[in-house]
Structure formats: structure tokens, C-alpha cells
Length: 483
Image (tube, rainbow, N blue to C red):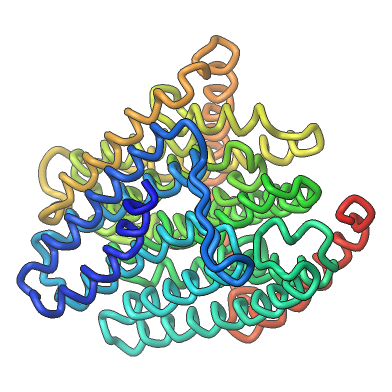
């Protein structure tokens, strides 16, 4: 299994650069890499014990592969497969498939890292490849958005790297476990880098513009898996060092509420989905011990929703209310919206039930408000008009991609089949009904536009400093338990 793991890590990078030598085979090679990742993730699920690999002692690489890694790797494999199928008949060049597979492989590497230096390398490679994907259209707008993303990402990683050095200074090890007993400033710097990189709370408000302005398949990759490369180490560190659990949960609740507050009032479909991503990442952090399953369901839902948004006749919801879409597009849009709202028979239901059962008492009210806000947000999709004839036509590859992703939502129901009790079914249905009523009676008749000042480039970097101070304050208050 050790040799298989090393081959699996190296294969995407090797194949990615090989695509340049065989440009006509680019999509086939990319498809093969994604299928191998899918098979590897299924192999992980059969492991009875975690796989722990260490190289070069304290200065080297520490890899940890278990069920948590398996959920994240499976998400990456399915989302990448869906994106490749969506692009199958497009005019994407070998350059696009090269960067796509490098992102895929680097994200996989981030999902098994258990030391800060290896994670840093993986996240930096992701940043470069994602930057090239965002800038792929080569328009002035796409290049600016890509440069903005790269600058914010690199600034966040600079904070992270300084914190990593401080952890090594305290323990002579780069292991995630080194957070225990490290000085508060070290933990605060590392967490700031990961929070900003992962799109968490105010430091992550770079995300909506980046995800909404990217091409459809790139948006699906970014929201489906790329942001989770920084979420995974937060979840992993929480499970390794329980003393930081309260801090991660605080940011989970705050992020869930912040994201959904923006998403409810957003009238641009892609921006709404991007703000929803911010909110859903909060759900993952609100209950870290079950975050892997929620990450899987969110990755499948959000990537499918972004792909569907790419074939809608317009991005503006006000226009869509008067411009019916094809029923063949509306049906998968409704299925995905049902899942993210927590409707039974789809894995989003089981993920939300499992998350709610693992909340601490002080989190319950906030997370229930976020769940209600999610149902209200996606009522905007569910109540859109549709028609059997006319309307927009789905692009080639759309049906196969959506079938894969939504089929995954149905199959993933089996992960937590215990959720199907009468009490568990009634609560989400009531929440969804209340969300729909809130939309029909209140929001449908009002168009409220929230200010975008917090998303402006010059404010994003300043907010990082404020979050760093807030983190340091939280950690100093928790210093007794950390030592």
C-alpha cells in the first residue's frame, strides 16, 4: 500500500506534464488520472487501520491516510471526473488539462499531509495551477481576477509559513501535532493562512469574485475541491489537537452565518453559489469529527450547481424569472438544490443530520439559522419557471457530468442511513418549508443589494490583520488548555 500511495501521488504530476508531449490525448490522460484517484479512494475505505508514512524524520514528509482522507479524496476524484466530462467536447487545449490534473494531484497531496511543510508545498502548487486556470481565457478581466487570487493566496501563505517556523522552533518538528504546546502567535499565524486560503469568515471574502468570474468548469473545481485543500488541515489539526476544537467551531458558525447572509440577497447566480460555498465550508468546520462526509456531499452538490449555472440562459435571477429554462436543466437544478437544503433521499440530508447531531449546545441556534438561510437561498432556484420546449440548450457533456455528480449524491445516502428516522426527517422538511415561505412571502418581492466594500482588494489584506488579532486573543484565552 505504501508503494501504491507514492505512485498515486506522483502520477498526476507526471501525466500532467506528459500531456504536453501528447496534446491530442490530453482529455483521455486526464480522465485516466481521475479514475485512478477514484479507485484509490475506494481502496482507502477498505483499510482497517490508518496508513501513516514518515520520511526523513522530523525534517521530512508525514502522510496520514484514513477515512477522513478518503472522503476528501473521493470528492476530488468525482468532481474532477465531472469537470472533465463537462469539457469533453469543448475546445479546451492541452494546457487546460495539464493545469487541471496538476490541481487535482496537488489537492490529493494536501488531503494526506500531516506536516506543515509538505502542506505548504501542496498549497503553493495548487495556487499556481489554479491561477493559470482562472486566467485561461486570457481576457483582461480573467487575468486581473487571477492575479488578485494569487496575491491574496501568497500573502496568506506568508503568514502560514512564519507560523510553521515558530512551531518547528518550539518542537523541532513540522508535524500537525506540534500545535499542542506551541506559542499562541504560531497557531494564530498558521490558522490565519488556512482560514484565508480556505475562504473562511471575513478573511475569505476573496472567494465570491474569484469563483463567480472564472469559467464554469474552473468555478466547479474551485468550489468543489480546491478550497477544501485548506479546510482539510483545519479539520485534521482539530482531531489531532482537541484543545483548538472550540476555536475552529467558532469560525465554523461565523462562516456559515456570514456566507448565507450574503447568499440570500444575491441576484447573480454564480455569486450566490460562491457565497453559499463560504457558508457550507462553515458547516464542515462546525462539526470537525464528521466534516469529511459533509465535504463530500457539498463538493458533489456545488460542482454540479456551478456546471448547471453555466448552461442557464442568464446569470441574473430577475431575468431568469421571465426567461424559462428547459425542464431538462431545471430538474437537475432542483435535485441539487434539494440536496444542499437537506431534503431526504439525497446525501445532503444525511450530512446535515449528522452535522447537527455533533454540534455543541452553543452552536445549535446559529447553525439552525444557517440551515434555514440555505433553504431560503435555494428556493430562488426551485421556483424558477421552466418549459419543455424552447429555452436554453445544454452543452455537450453536460448530461454525463451531471448524472455522475447527482448519482453520487444518491449513492452517498448509504454512508449514514441511520439518519432516516421520523424525527430526523421531519425537522429538515419543516426547515425547508419555512425557508420556502420566507422566500415567497418576503424575499421574492424585494431586491436588496448588499455592499461589496469588504470584497475590495485593498480591504482583503487589511482584514487579515484584524483576524490575526482576533485569533491571537482567542488563543491567549485558551492558552492554559493548549499548554
